[in-house]
Length: 316
Length: 309
Image 1 (tube, rainbow over the protein chains, first blue to last red):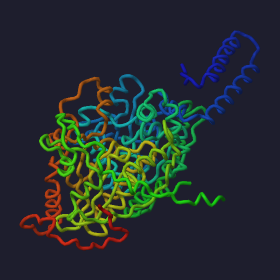
Image 2 (image 1 turned 90 degrees about the vertical axis):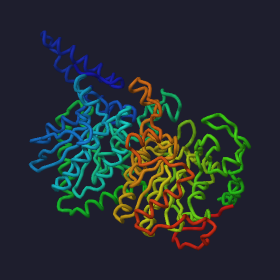
Image 3 (image 1 turned 90 degrees about the horizontal axis):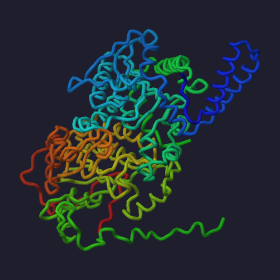
Image 4 (image 1 turned 30 degrees about the vertical axis):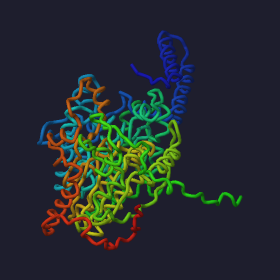
């Protein structure tokens, strides 16, 4: 059963009409033409809708439970994926998946937040909200990748780092700072893809990359629209306004020079055709790594530093 | 064009001195006792008796650290104003204007270069009175410039952090200050120069997830609130009451997150001693008295002498 977001109501109505007509057609009525006509209409409506998503609608799409998550990309794009566990200091954090595998035949280090798809997996992955252990594991793997000259791929999808007593006591902020620091210190190329939600410090910790790609309807923000609404407007119902004013869409971020390119989503969003989205993403990742092939460690590091220093100095 | 648009308005804010207290008496937030403002001010904004550390403005902080209360204000880069054209209940540009009038500062971070117990040091101070010390593009550039200057001058870099976190009105560009300031810290580290962070009340949010937690030595002032997530957010998430002293300086020290909690009166000698030890400079027999050091001119390119009353 397909689920619809509230703004998709016109499409949902057309789809249910198509289903009705199909049932009728199955019982012998000659209404094939009518079905095709309404199907075309539904496709057009979906295109129209998704070409004009508001920032708040994009927020809902970015968080769609059926949107392909980190592990969907890993399963489709990475062969011989071998997850590694633990930060060697305190524990293992499955919100942040980390390991080595092959991307198009070559070794790659993969880091990514996994939100989970079922109640059980969501709990296991803590809804994609990492604790300090997750970021310290990321640092450990990045150091390893650097030493073995293996490029790093980050798949970013988190509402933010986990806010909890233990996380604070064990230095959540320091763990994030060290992870960003580790990204900036890498002498190997790294590519980050914002596949869903890029939630603040929890995202930047693994998204400080030579190339930052972002899906067409993903969001990337310093604070969630809901939190911004209650802090800046002192009114939790202003999330839509906050989403618009904070400029969190891929289109805005490209203009600010915060991301390098936008990956177009299939009609109706990534969740309507995960396989197509993952294939597009795979090609873009390959392209990004290819562009940096042959660069030495110092050049890679310098390019990344300069790229971040330049952000905000000129805005087109 | 009407020639009147070119009129330069007199800078009223330079006439208004904010160290004139509005109230002669202030109440200690800890004990509730009433104390004479002048006594607090002359005690480095520590309440006599209760030892409660009040917030300290950027200029007062610089005075407390640099010899002879003298330093050079480091010229800071201009940044693009209001990139998001942001407004919430009010326009961001109006909030900025108000903060400038209120504090006399251009943005939340001030950078100074001068001597501390005789040795050159670059000091950056976040002023909480300027929009909660929030980290935006201007503050990020100020820190990067300060770190670059420390590398040029081969001197240690000290930051006094005080901030509610990222400046939300600059959206993603404020988040980008986390990696940007980290680049600055890396440059200092590569030059093998000490980086000391002093966490003051309060230091929270994105600031703690970048330069404020990357110091070679991490110091905090007594009782300072230091944390990544806000207490209310944590309580709402876990539906539990927070432990006593949670996210306070002493709590962080007990959990191994910072090196020491230092009383404001002891900060300068502690910082100077650490700088000497880490730069392998000779020990000094007794800390020189401020008056004994000649107010010698320090050459700092891009730096203009600070005007102090």
